[in-house]
Length: 103
View 1 (spheres, helix red, strand yellow):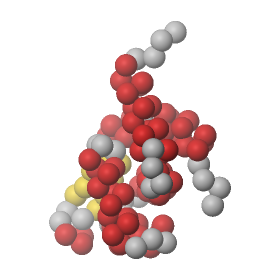
View 2 (cartoon, one colour):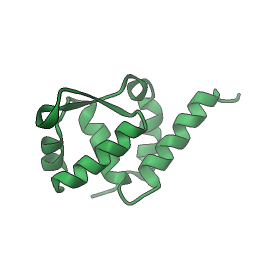
View 3 (tube, helix red, strand yellow):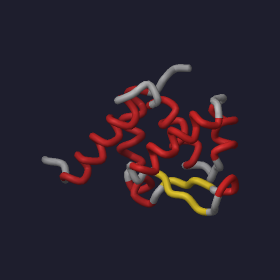
């Protein structure tokens, strides 16, 4: 049975976002944090134990690829999983389980 092309595209996107760069583990962690509750950049940086600019960089990459969306402005801006990301969480979980960092 073949997979729908949208599922294949999402799978490729997840591999690119999670395994295509050194930042992939942090991006996966951000997705897992946001699936529980919204965060602002400062709280994400604290949760990940990274500098504010690092968290901001990863959020921009996730937002650019339509995996997260935001509400609010400036420092009060909150980030959420996008509806598209929420719809594809099983695919994310499948790939994350294969590459999840142990640390």
